[in-house]
Image (cartoon, rainbow, N blue to C red; front, top):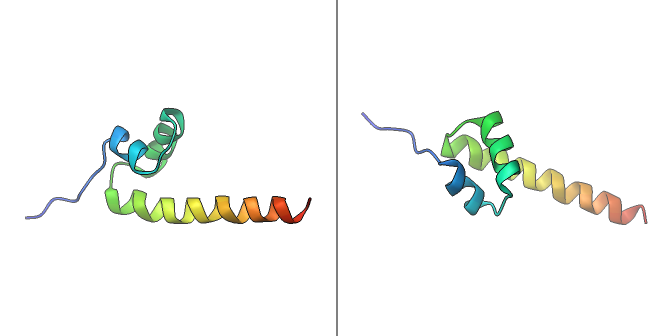
Length: 59
């Protein structure tokens, strides 16, 4: 029987260089699953990059 890999909030915060507040917020949305959090962060980071690009293009 294998166990699913999980993050602690602190491990997650450090892995993605997040503030404690943001790490807790996202952790509460997704739960401790390392797989779920990693996938979530790929989408989350891309949406931030897209938003930054959009905001720069509007200037």
